Image 1 (tube, rainbow, N blue to C red):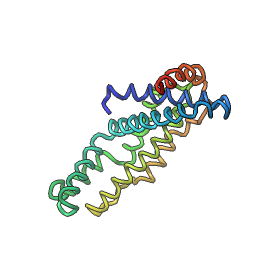
Image 2 (tube, helix red, strand yellow):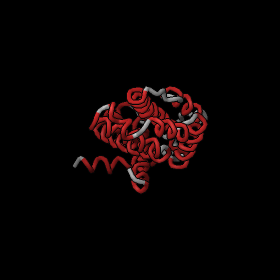
Image 3 (tube, rainbow, N blue to C red):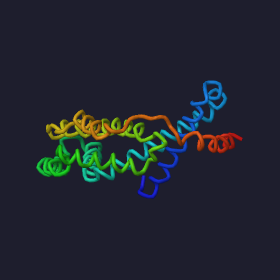
Image 4 (tube, rainbow, N blue to C red):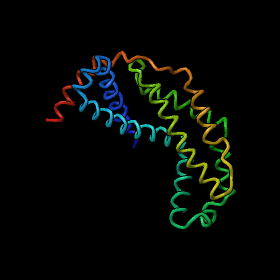
Length: 199
């Protein structure tokens, strides 16, 4: 996802989330009536959210993402033992010290939460949902990086994946799920578009 594409992802996230929330608020009979459209909206929302969250992490942790992507590629081609020949442990540890200390992680994760708050409208109620999803993705990414660090260099990633989750949860502590207020109006504008896709 490029910087230009993220706006489209945000719009799709909010539109489809609003739509599903608006339908759910009208009871199970309406939800059953639009089950096909809701399934499609959920799929679009998930795809857009995954792309958006990936963009967020890559933007904030560019150097770490590039480093571990390089390690993964070398490992896949040559195996664990060859990786230090291409990326010496000294360089690896130095990069982690510079880019992944606890204070730096706190600052960058806080920055991510602030950025997400600007991207997602507060009245839609999507921010806490998207942040919860981001925490999960951060855990998955840092978990993979933790395993690579241990497997290739016998180096413990500190802070590790669980620490990152704690930091992210603390950063998002002020965000609490709330009922969607903007969804109803937009939701029914989306119904026609989704129904027309099926024709």
